Image 1 (cartoon, rainbow, N blue to C red):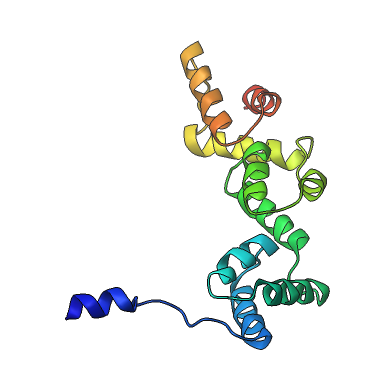
Image 2: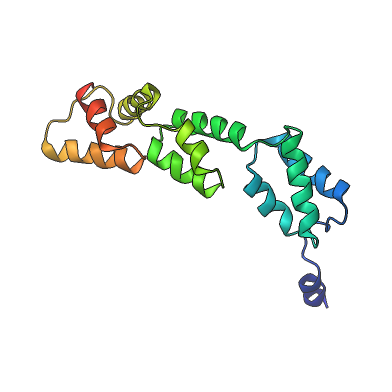
Length: 163
């Protein structure tokens, strides 16, 4: 008996959204916590909606009202990830996954920005301290580390030479 009941109504299933007002309230509740891209909001809300045209209408209105902005999200996200020690290649890939347009990504994330070199140096210092690599293997290890974090070779080289 309990098994049947559990399979019929999931414990944490959210109530379906039936009106534009309910959809807007749900979107506003999400946006009150943090910035979201349009695609992220769409993905979160589409599961609870039968009428996708209402969702599109709400998302368009939120963007028009300035309450949802992919540009604002991308600026904030780029700064946050750079401070976490990630490089431009990785940040670009993450922004693409979140639905940010290529034009916006290109405008915000460019490898010649001096902040990326600072981020690479800080990551190296945090991981390895003030020590200099003593062997070719140690240099290769540091290159792989920074490469995994999303830094391109010219930034890696500059960070290693500036240590």
